[in-house]
Length: 359
Image (tube, rainbow, N blue to C red; front, side, top):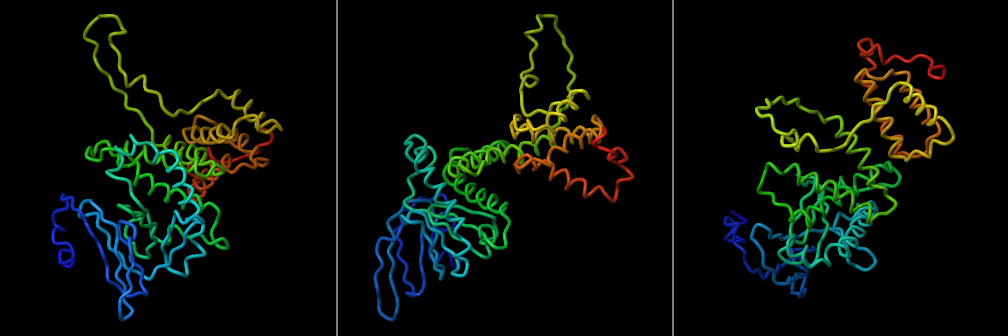
């Protein structure tokens, strides 16, 4: 194959080899590899020979890239994104996120020798973020590179909603989290993959919260991820026979004592008291995450037919003065859900609304 013509041992990915890479190319093109450029040498006929620093890694990680992409960097030239020239104005936000996440990781992770010894076989000397128009995967990372689909990280100030910034930030943080910290997790145990994935998702939000202090990413994590996961939670009733009469403390199930996310169900009078308080001027005394969870929990109990729909709307009525989008988010998801039920409303008579104010 063409790959084996360049690298004869391509079909032996387990080999770790010392590479001295140099690429001869037209001067109008840019070349990149896993290591930084050591020396560019001008040749005749508008050609150039670019030498890269020596590297030692598995052959499956070798990247040789030749393109007409343009490079945009931050002020101190420590973070860079390669993309098509016409996309440069729309890559500024992605560069801002990559720069701040890199700064946070360098300050809080890279300086930890023990973490590095476990997470990395050696310290990468550079990382290039590259945006392709036709990348099959949403994101890929390898030694010296993080690759994206350009449509996933461009942001147009005039056309795109602000919420798109959150998706871009999460994608970039995810790539960098998987790149550096994902190696701490052992991928060989497929039945633990959900745990590894959950840890990376949580960590990307935590890193963004620290790298972009005004983003409130951990608050968003709670209302967008944790609340959604509650709808997927269920339990299985397990009946097992007790075959001995020893002290009950000896018959102990650790699973029954594991605590996780929860919903709070109140009696009707307490729901009414909460609704009255939310609809008062003092509603901000309730933390914004709790205000969001009240709406999320209340609608859940409506759908379970444990709470009157009119009482739910009395609770939600306070949102007319709410200015925090995090508190609004559960209600937006409610509207999305109800919009799908409108054609089927005759099958959900308990969702019909009367006079809310007089409830």
